[in-house]
Length: 138
Image (cartoon, rainbow, N blue to C red; front, side, top):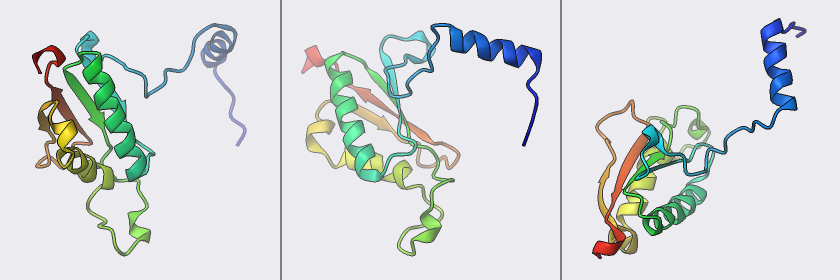
């Protein structure tokens, strides 16, 4: 596969390599809509245990930073390899349904959470939102 780059693509590539630009880390606290009270985490590629651990730490970290709204991206489960496991549903994404349930079953986490908007009725959704209580109001 020998494709030639356009002059613009080649220039963009050279500018990127020679410049100080970096590829953003998806796990960093990126503020959506430039809102300081909002943070996001992307759980694509994580196993269920990894995702649960990561989201638990993320929730506590955001609570400490007084961030009120968390956007948790789980994905829809469309690329998972659940079809290779006869004990898993081909119609349900593992993280999409299991991570919100993990959070809801954790009493300590729920004590700092106002509400979870998991939109389980929307099959096209690969994310959910968590609204945290304010730290100084506890």
